[in-house]
Amino acid sequence: MKQAMVILNPSSGNEAANDYKAEIVEVVSDKGYNVTVKETKKQDDATAFAEEAVNEGYDYVVGAGGDGTINEVITGLAKYDNQPLFSFVPFGTVNDFARAIGIPLKPKAAIAWLKEADTEQRVDIGKVNDRYFVNVVALGAVAEATYDVGVEQKTRLGPLAYYIEGAKTLAENKIYPLTFKVGGETIEEEAFLVIIGMTNSIAGFERIATDAKLDDGHMHVFIVKKLAGFDIMTVLPSVLAGEFKDHEKVHYIKTNELTIESTQSLHTNIDGDEGDDLPLHLTVLPKHIRLLKK
Image (cartoon, rainbow, N blue to C red):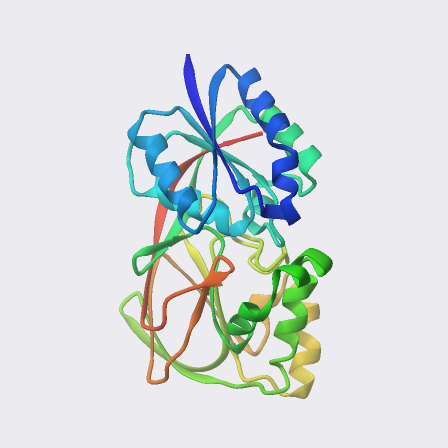
């Protein structure tokens, strides 16, 4: 009989993930799998469980948790060529990867989607230094501000919690001297914010990288320059209209490899969690994950 592993973070979604464990197991079992459930207790548990699934020859891995948990599962799978199929049920605050795939954000609907998932698609992921990412790498004051969002804020406000903290940095409008090396070219920019996205959905906005596809082999880079008062008023409408890359204060780059350096110390945010300091070397791993989707 085929083997499946469900990797579940019981604290995700204000502990809602644990409430749906039995339903997830039932759906996976009905697909013809013998199911093993692994529950995370600390950081990197999901990565270790995913590696275990690969090494023990599991056929299917299903994640259940927030953006950080899903990143950990994919990190565990990404190291290997002989990967099992992968699906997930999102219980996060923003759930960008789920949005890009088309997975419903409500648990009941997401589990119903999982039940009907029967098509394999190879999807891209990114690698930044020695880490993997599926959604976004961000740097700048806005990215750092997301570290201040607490669990209670996320539970109460959802994605709005991140927007509120990010908005606090707009008045300061701090910029950073950055060097981008891409395609044999060196680009110098003074940037307020840099966003590197793998899919169309970034920070819950599904029209930032409108050209992005799950398997296009590229990352989509948005370098936001210093914003004056009126610029701030025009950025959000450009995002909502799907015209962010065309904004006069945005330098857009589409590439499969990129290096970012700075003379200043600058932290990053990788898939919603604290990432490496600069310098960064980013590459695309094309069609690297065996996604099972509807």
